[in-house]
Length: 119
Image 1 (cartoon, rainbow, N blue to C red):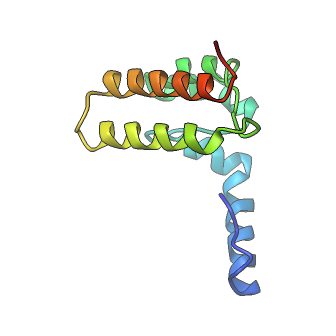
Image 2 (image 1 turned 90 degrees about the vertical axis):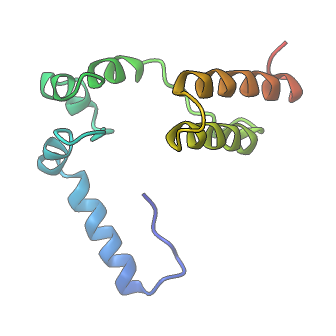
């Protein structure tokens, strides 16, 4: 979530109020019961309630220990663009999800090699 500095202060306050409400533990506990209701709250993320809410929550929770953001990588924009394009193709039904993920991996590897972050 983000707040634009280009909107009126009243709208910025509304956005801040929404974010404060959304991040409250009680709201997050309700949010995780919804399909794709992921959370950044580590206590909730590791709770049995979260892990049992959907079939994919438990593996998602485990995968967070391996997650590394690539914001600090110089090729971030290229990596993100490749991900967005291929995930979009999968979501639009143009490619099977597994094929889209395989293409993302290949494109990321190519980009990492191009910028000298992989051999």
